[in-house]
Image (cartoon, rainbow, N blue to C red; front, side, top):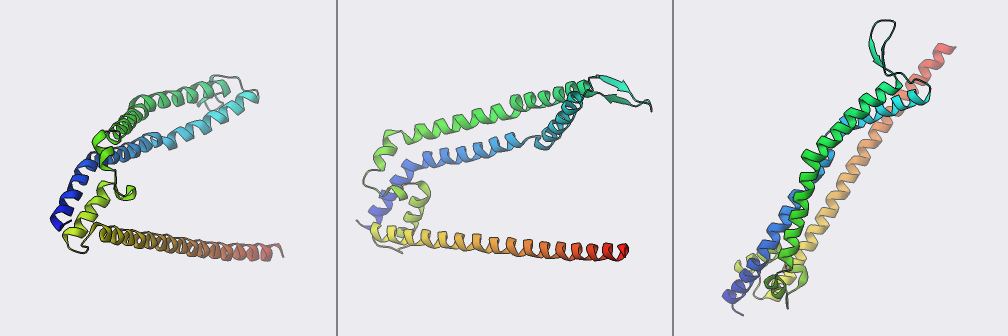
Amino acid sequence: MSKKEILDYLSEKKRLTAPVATAENNVRVAERNYEKACKKWKWGINILIVFLILFIWYFLSGDHRLFFFNEHHVFQAGGLGGIILFGGILLLLLYVKRLRYTNPAQNKLAEAQNILKQEKNKADYINGSKNFPAKFYNYSDLFRLWKIINEERAESLKEAYNLLETQQFQQDQMAIQEDIRRLQQETATASKVNAAASVVTAYNTAKTARRLK
């Protein structure tokens, strides 16, 4: 095939995969929004759970009071009162969170996933994948293949496939090296923190020993 024929061929593949690429991006956005919704009020809910467990322990220990004033005339909750108060607030927060944030985000995620499934099941998209390398049948790789041919870095599709595969391998290796570098930095930082903690501990131990003499 000539350069123009290859570019036209890849352009058609891009057209077929573009709706799927858009749907995949929408799914990623919906997933992030759902994760944010699940984390909404996380700390507040955890604190309420701690207080609820504490008052349940009071209740099981024999404190069955609702609310009362102590000897300093300060209003306080007893075991039963704390369970009702913090349990009620916790249930209210969970209900509001689910109603206003979690459920809508979950519905949008399900809708985005359904659209992606529909796009991938369309006859044009499926037929376009025939006689084409499956690992390159996506909008991003097709665009890179098109660019390789357009910039004349390859004269045939086979050469373009090989070049793109080499580029992807190099990118994977760079990503691995970056992960290793970050791990080494984290290990070095942790070692410094542990060393500093050891020095402080040794100093405090020696100081305490001198006081005991």
